[in-house]
Image 1 (cartoon, rainbow, N blue to C red):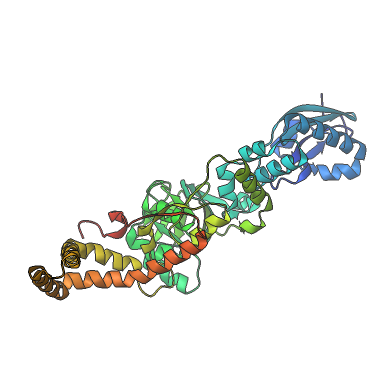
Image 2 (image 1 turned 180 degrees about the vertical axis):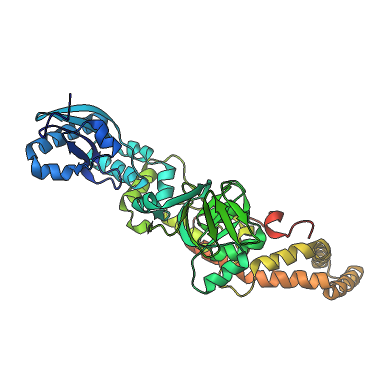
Amino acid sequence: VFGNMGWDSGSGVLFTRNPSDGAKGLFGEILFNAQGEDVVAGIMTPIKLSELHDQQPKLYKELAEIAVKVEGHYKDMQDMEFTIERGVLWMLQTRTGKRTARSAIKVAVDMAEEGLIDKRTAVKRITPNNVDRLLHPQFDPAGKKAAIQLAKGLNASPGAAVGIAIFNADRAEEHRKAGDPVILVRPETTPDDVNGMIVSQGFLTQHGGGTSHAAVVARGWGKPCVAGCEDIRIDNNRNLFTVGEYTVKEGDWISVDGATGEVFLGKVSKIETAFEKETELIKALEWADEIKHLGVLTNADNPEDAARARQFGATGIGLCRTEHMFFDQEGEKISRRENVVNMILKSEIAAPILRQLEALEVALEANPGDEETKAEYKELKKKADANPDVKQYRKALENIMPFQRQDFLGIFEAMDGYPVIIRLIDPPMHEFLPPREE
């Protein structure tokens, strides 16, 4: 069949639902007096199918009826191609339509409510990646299409971030205080960069993988991160990076997409998300709770993550890593990390002394009249109180205790009686200590 037989002929593509937002109804384009390859090639400007409704209502009605019938048969959104030859409609092919995360969730929920599929099928059609993408800021598809893509690295932590490129953690902190949104750009990050990471919108590293420091911290904080972007060449001496014909200097605007690993030049418009407004997702999660055989506990190390997990339906915390309570937080005057580092460095001398004191205290509780143990305890306590390492060790513990107490209270309040499994401090040395040479 031929769509180029005159102005009563044409070719087009239609989706049975909107592939961007999942709205029900025909979505697509048609070119009159043209073949299918003309539509796909983009050499001519098609009209929207919605305009066909006004120009040829009978033809539009026929398309709509066929779309309903085919979608009802396959029980999923369809991507269909058609040709009109001298006023006669011919359907050429159909396939399951590709869709955005938002569309996937809405289509699944809507089809279940329409009776096309059951709840279990709807839940199975929604992937973890769909949910992950929907709950993080995303770039507007039109904005991404118009932007200049500089490079592509590893999609280490989802979300979209826009800011000025800054190549040093301390300068990132200064710019943030001045009100500038920052993207921290580093060859790779280390614990020494944490002060700049806290205030940054997102991270871009030249080296590293999905388990690198930047990736782990980004996922823990819910910040976008593109790691291992080997296409770029960072020059820390001149505070710039080059990629192909482009040079990005400190202060230039860039945009990073942690969900895809893409890096763009300039500002790309974002679409912000709010869980409470995602009605279809909330409904799908409720259905998942109805049909589940296995409950879900979350990883959460602070009150904010605990509250968010409860909002998403988690029924407890399966792992609360106390070492993550000691990352510095924006706006706090006392550094959590510095105190934990000091505690670790002084523990080699201080901890054995304090453990020995504790053992003597236990012995005295069991036998208060033991004069020899009393004397030994008194002598050791005097030495401990005078020992500078013990003093610094105790001071560090004293400084971090209020933070940890506050975090635990917030976590327990958020969980409201659900179980919280706590792992006592087990700090990865590379996250809390300077390099071994230092």
